[in-house]
Image (cartoon, rainbow, N blue to C red; front, side):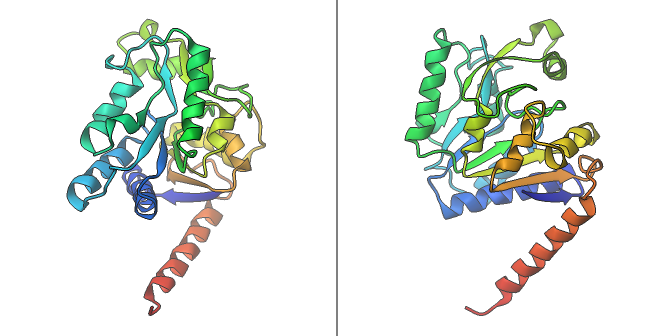
Length: 266
């Protein structure tokens, strides 16, 4: 796990967008796992800018979103499909047929979840998965206690998650209590994972996820088991880390090596 600490949320977003852009340059038909929430908004904004101003091409990209509220149709302004349309899909050239977001208005939920898993596999698996993290350590909607081997399924939302998400609704009563979500096991099958976090409210749980034990009580801690994870934090989200100085030092050493390589003649 590589932990990168940046000064601000804007720095986190630019660095994350650069990693995604390089992925697309290396493999134009990359399969991206996408997240919603406040953490990736700046990253999506930067990707849209790169598409418009630098020609970053999404024409061969396939996407799979992590989750969606149950009972909300895609047209609902609080649905995650609507969120993705507003922040990314409507502004870049991903073909409509290449976009996959769990369908929250489905009736046969179990059948749909099996289909969603099959679609990921038929697309060749996820090359780069983007994640945020909840204040209780959940990734996607894998609430505390979720199996670390879980697959895409229906999940009941924990009360802290409902309270956190109430800021997006007029009243807390309007927040859905169920969601379709990729499982922890599904997420861990991605070839590479990019976790983003910012703000002091994430500091405690980030420390537990990165430096604490691997436990189903903090589903983000399962990322310690993955061989290729990049965690990008702003300075506030990093305040709980006991090894923050080492992470900063290690990143600077890596940057120096990269700069030296770029200066070598061909």
